[in-house]
Amino acid sequence: MKTPEETRKGLTGIQRVAALVGPLVIRALYATWRVREINADGWKMLRARHEPFVFALWHGQMLPLVVRHRSQGIRILISEHRDGELIAQIAHRLGLAAIRGSTSRGAARALLAMCEALQSGAEVAVTPDGPRGPARSFASGAIVAAHRAGAPIIAIGVGASSAWHLKSWDAFMIPKPFARVTVAYSEPMYVDAVNSRAAAQQVSQFEAVLNRTVMVAQESGCSSP
Image 1: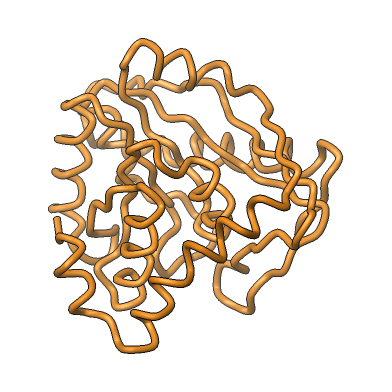
Image 2: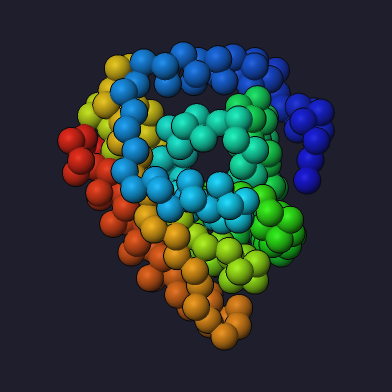
């Protein structure tokens, strides 16, 4: 896992400025949103019991969820690609720790780090379609890590009454100022499998739950493509 200083060294000048200014802009934008949560009792109960779990969210919905759960000590899986360096630094300034790696680069190391974090009692957040897509396609790493650690997965979805969507592979979502933002959570889902290979074969099940959770958020008084 890279230190914040090591992360800074990998950034260009413009990216370093963005890493400093970005968290301030994000916090200011978040302060204007009217946020409500749906079905949050499950993960809050786990946290109260100090039981680890995995948050699963689509890459394109990362921004509102990262700022919503800032300063909670959650460890978020961030790719080792160049773009990931900037995200890691912003996440650090928002009070989130980074686990570096992805399904396409550093996968074995990332899986081990996720397992170790969960086994130590930490909470982990994963974008199972990151860092390059296909969008909303659930890779198996989070499921395997949760299975090995005996921790549940909780899907998170976001809906916003108005938002910008970048022209990126994930249609990255930025709720506009004063938007109504709904954050929906699934019930905690334990991975019922005899081994890691069997756990990895359950991707369609967890993908469906995450998509349903996003739909719940979008249909609860908000809209989002």
